[in-house]
Length: 73
Image (cartoon, rainbow, N blue to C red):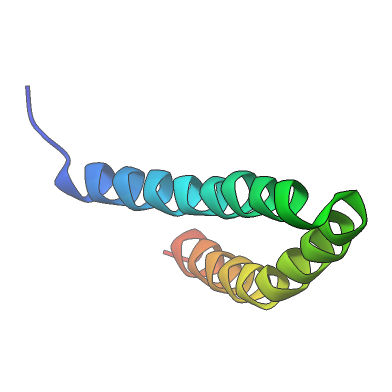
């Protein structure tokens, strides 16, 4: 049974990124809710989403370029 180390690396990186985002929203949002209340939580979530949206756009663009380059081979 062969190991695909590139696939394993990609899978691990994806899991780490998703775990970090979950920690940001769950722990960060929970602390904002506990300390400042529900009004501040909605503002905090809005700021977190606004901060992550450029990163998400860049990742989607790079994924699209990779998809096109693999398709043309």
